[in-house]
Length: 135
Image 1 (spheres, rainbow, N blue to C red):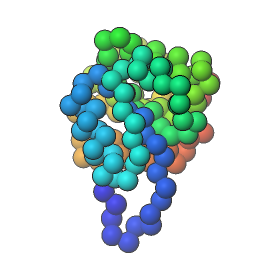
Image 2: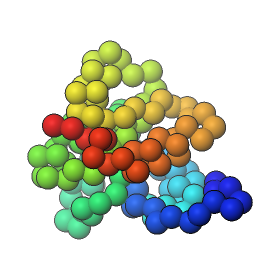
Image 3: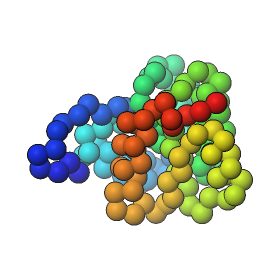
Image 4: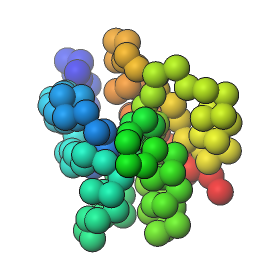
């Protein structure tokens, strides 16, 4: 949460994609408490089916989903010229996942989230969007 005396800033839209409804709802709630606008989707096909994808914001995507994994979803979004910075959420990322994410300029936040780790990464990625995604 924001500290006393901290200047208010405009927060970008956070797009949350997670197949677990409880996680999705919890993330939406906690991010909104932090002042972010949030759109939540149950999986990759749901997000890809949204014809009104914002040009700005931040993608917060679960890696392990049944219909399409997070890295594949981000790849499909990049093919559609959605260049919003991306954060991948996962438990125990494999070396392959880490390598693919690093090559794509995608930050990884490991579950379970500890303290303000997720909020700190979101703020960092959103304040430096040009460095969050690299071709």
